[in-house]
Amino acid sequence: MGNFYIIPLAALIPLMVGFIWYNPKVLGTAWMNASGMTEEKARGANMAVVFGLSLLFAFLLAMSMQFLVIHQVHLKSMFFKQPIEDPNTEMGALYKAVMDKLGTGYRTFKHGAFHGTICALFIILPVLGTNALFERRGFKYIAINVGYWMICFMLMGGVISAFL
Image (tube, rainbow, N blue to C red):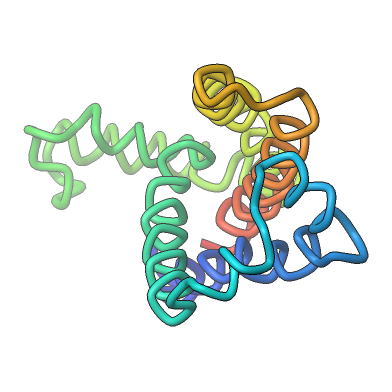
């Protein structure tokens, strides 16, 4: 898989979406109220560490997203212990034939965004929802945070599927 710059580009998506989503004029004030965050708490944070770690975590998400949105990644794993680099071998010829026929199938922005949405609904919602229940947060807190991650996963999945 080429285009080494796509993963770092996709990793920037949560930061860019977050600047808009959590802006006080959009949902930032509602999020602060729902989460119990105050201006004093926010000012007390080391923002270099917060943004640095956020970027690192987004990079890890972008790297893992390719396994969730690109079907061809899994195809190669089926041949993992077989010599597939040489198309003159039986497994190599089979792998080449399958990739020639299906190698670019479902590699669109729309398809990646669909898988990103599914991941958000079936992974992000249960994880954040469970945390919110134990933290005694309300529906608004869950909706704001899951909505943010759904948009991020849709965009990341779309970019990775279409361009990686």
